[in-house]
Image (tube, rainbow, N blue to C red; front, side):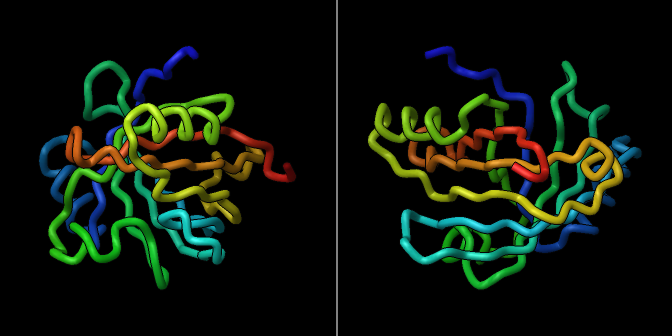
Length: 163
């Protein structure tokens, strides 16, 4: 299996605007904003979860075209609830990579490292003009890798908005 290369570093923050403003002070001035709904499963629970995600993206601050994301979830449950998000301090949420089959590679990593898929979502109703124009949405599969590296791995599969 060809393993994907990471393209994204994501910071989770309950103080979203403050975190983005901090990075602006450091020189990350241009941001693309997006909001979307996520529908799927958390921590391998059978019941479906619906979340609202607010995401800000910067493509110039990090080297080698790495994407910097500031992320905030709103909803009854997500994979950070009961963990580091309870501290209300921004933290490294995940490193992400694109994949043609996010679920399969997520399952591969979970099995190889004896861990779990802590989130498996489909995104809907994006607000970013780029996302709307390109008619995209995503499958996001997050594998709990915190005991090895201190953050999660996320695999992202691009999909047509009507798929």
